[in-house]
Length: 89
Image (cartoon, rainbow, N blue to C red; front, side, top):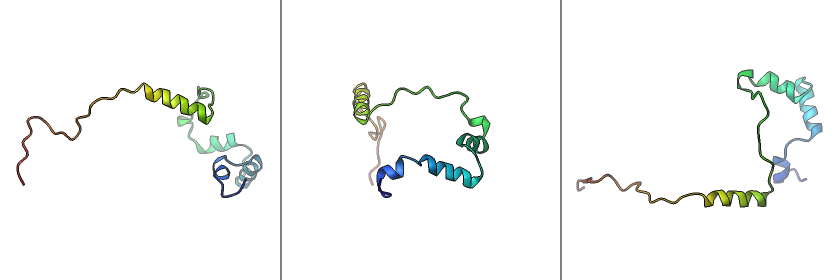
């Protein structure tokens, strides 16, 4: 992967990179890093209940189906209040 590519910047570090970073800061695991940096009071106590992963195409279909559930209403934003009288300028 080219260093300036989208994938290189967004996929995340390789295992060897993680090991080197942990070694640099003197820790043995990501779990230890989390224990030492994230306050226990705000850590989740159980695993997240996430749905199965989707491909980009599946997500596109999913989000389109959700959009179909929206209702379109007439908006009155910016129309003022009745009976509003605006003085001449």
